Length: 214
Image 1: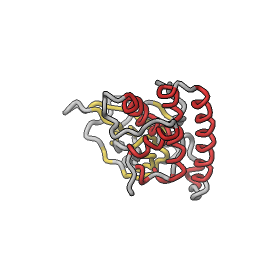
Image 2: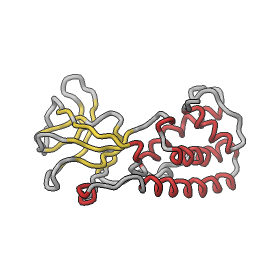
Image 3: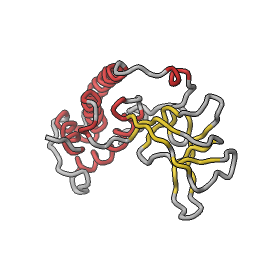
């Protein structure tokens, strides 16, 4: 049976001994409000925390019609589902930055790579919202992490919260270790310097514990 975000959330609630929910948008049910508040940011932080094989995408970027006004000659649109830029095909001496620009014509905000290069291709970690596309070990760790973040708001049990934190940390280590064994990186990737980027700044990854519990 295909899984949904509700089945994932209910698996986390089951770890807390809490009743399942039927929707993340119900504003009259406390469990729904709590899980809706933490679900997306927990998923995004978990995807950012490692270069997951199942979340890797490659794209030749399209030049943006609005040229940068400062520092670089060209701008290229970054896919909307890109969470981190993990690699580019630019040479080591070709500078680039990840920025957000507002279009001069329709005033919409776009994520772009600015550079002087005449073309850019990237590998990136995508926001994969479909649980059926996740690696099983990633899914298991995410469920326990959701339970950890929801433990105190729902149960007021600090011991349960702490035990779930320890379990989640162990599961993430195991999932990342296994994921890292599935493939062999190119020498170019190994020689590139800090190409992984969070939006708003270059470098770094977000850990699943990097944001404050509600």
